[in-house]
Image (cartoon, rainbow, N blue to C red; front, side, top):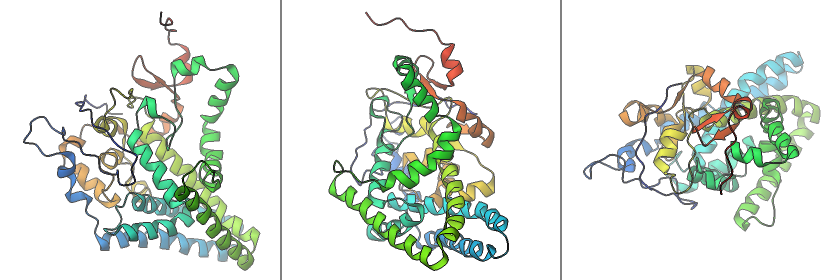
Length: 365
């Protein structure tokens, strides 16, 4: 993995507001005559209708076509249907990226068009649009902030916090961070079950988003089960969804969980550093970059979330500031799964074994 050079701190802040995709960063470069990040990236943040429609045509439509093919393949062999679940999962991940762009208002110029398309695609990826949009924007506003963890991110403890836990709490954390749980049960809990739950503590808009999506899913799934049978529906839908969920969680994991990641206290945290040092550039083979909708260029996305996925690579290539960010290969991304705890002393993410070998700091007087 390539390590980044230190970036300057600027004390910039982000908010939780619904329109907080683009955070003003007026200290992008040294010197008052230099443009801000928003000015620098403004051109890339302009969606193109034809290109956005092409994204739809190369994500949702192939997924639907493969789902139909899986149904007819059942008449021949279940194994053929399961084999088709692999490319279907890839197109479902790509569909999620389009949904994700809609939550940032980067798919179309029209806010209403983004909301309507996002709500429809939310049925494919089992995500209530307004609720997911809110939680994800909190993630953008707090990524890498040690004092504001817990919403829209992968729960991460520091070494000191882990040591302060009871044995039972440590076992629970270790179990949660185990790959079999995170990438096996994780998609079921985090993407299928969790988003179905509405609570009274949620604002009405968030709660209605959950309940409305649940109702729509109930009607659609019930209709499909009556039409093709419950068993056929599950064989067609579940394997592809589980694979897509596992792949999606892994992508989200390695985008912020790598050895030289960025975690700072609120006083030292800045939005720009969190984007350029705390969001990785995951360099994937071309076919995987296609299915993941360029989301591996996560550093660009976090600096300006209004940039459509199809402009991320160009923004990276044409701006030197992006050329020295944390860069991970596919192998680096797979190895990052072993990292579990943040060591504040060394400023890096470590494994449980590495954490056990670290000296215990004396308690403060």
